Image: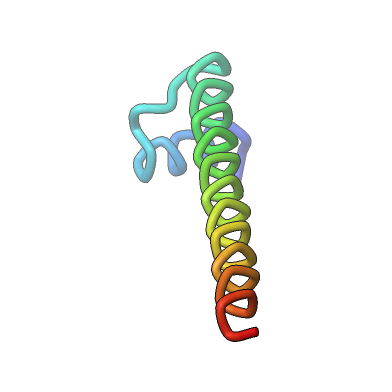
Length: 60
């Protein structure tokens, strides 16, 4: 399959991506979502650590 035919086939699955700048914008959006998700995980871990500390303090 030629490169042009492969590109056309892929465009059928993701028609809104037509240019390199569009692809770059999508990648940046995915990276932002990943960063936000990572921050949420870290924040929830911090809350868990704080609740464990405060719970152990109350028990003692």
